Amino acid sequence: MATTTDAYGSMMVLSVEPALTAREGDNFREVAGEQIRSGARWFILDLSDIGYFDSAGLETLVWFQEQIEQAGGDVKVAGLKGLARQTFEIVRFDRKFEVFDNVHEAVKSFH
Image 1: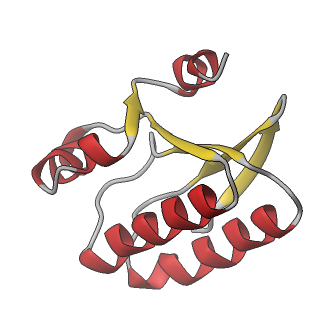
Image 2: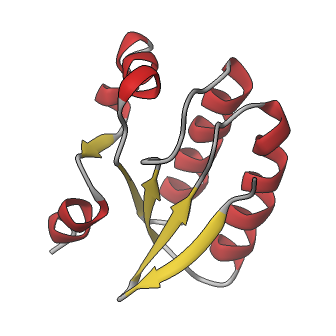
């Protein structure tokens, strides 16, 4: 699958499925990079349909967060569950990213 985008007011929602691995990471970087270059600064990563991450996928998330911070923006994570959420917590990414149960809650946190 691919990374998809959806504008939600002034925020850009990036949805990733079914996993974020080295294979999907290249597509994610391409799509995210296009959004950053177009001026988007406020992002929500909708990971509600993601099953798992590998180390390359986690590195991709770090890359993305660094790009957004350098651009003066912010990124929040929504919808993690199951193994993906456990992995996120084991590597302590829940301390690196604000995590919300769903996209709606993440959107409200920007206001």
